[in-house]
Amino acid sequence: MKVNIPLKSVVDNSYDITIDTISKIHFDTKVAIITNPKVAGLHLGYLLSKITAKELYIITIPDGEEYKNQNSIDLILESLFNHKFNRKSLLIAFGGGVIGDMTGYISSIYQRGIDFIQIPTTLLSQVDASVGGKTGMNNSYGKNLVGAFHQPNTVLIDPYFLTTLADREFGAGVAEIVKMAVTFNKDFFEFLENADLKDPLILQEAIKQAVQTKADVVAKDEKENGIRAALNYGHTFGHVIENETKYKKYLHGEAVAIGMVMANETALKMNLMNEKEALRVKNLLEKYNLPTSYKIEDTRSFYETFYLDKKSSDSAITFIIPIGIGGVKISDEIDVGTIMCVLNKFGDFNV
Image (tube, rainbow, N blue to C red; front, side, top):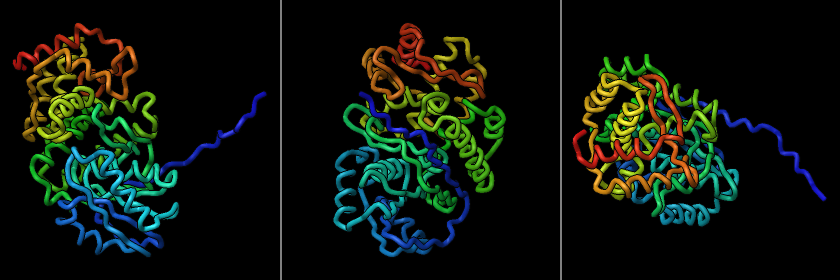
């Protein structure tokens, strides 16, 4: 016997991303703002001047990638249960990518799913992490290996929050902007080469173009079954670097910058990118003081860690390789010898 459940209706997960000063908003429900002490100290007063709610709670967790774990998830969940949040309640992610990813993940699992809003406060989270509905946490095996696709109701990108951003955090965000330009938009890359992103108006235009690029890709492939995987350019290598350094030496965008250089070296080996193009990418990253070199101590161990990547299967590792500037190739058929040659070059630290 067979019973069919006809669940073929299409769910509309569309939402708006606003790049502007946050307008005043009132929510007629329980709201929890999830943040960390650093962001709260700098910007919570500003946010509370914009947002009111029937009941409003502030939940803070420690700052840093090393706290993107089950302990922090449990702390937030316990607070929501204590305050009797229900399915009509709302979460607000107020911080960088760590806060956004965990808040989104919690909203996807709390009572099987409640609404949340992204209010990103770093450049990296404004142009990348807050857009697209990827949520999750880290564990001992790697980065974001536990999570869900859960889209926010809206994303509010307020350039005001970037006025207090440290130079390293700014550079980390630039890395994600460069990532999208290299893989999908040659004209945008050329704009970045000639732009001064320290100029607020130019930066706002760069944010808009980066967000539009990512939004176009996500609209075609929400659950990363195809072209969206290309947005992980630099990440396959970068995640191993983060894992090896226990998430303490590099910011996420810094590890991605190194990962892009490694991916470009792979592209050179495959004749998909020329030396001049690779140098242009490297120069643009270094313009914002991003690291572009890394000493691999154990190339075999580095290679084996690739298998923990979410895009990889039991027997194949998926790599995102640029095709010149403005194109990209997703492949799980790059031979071990090619990748090991690249890793050995970084092992010799002669890049």
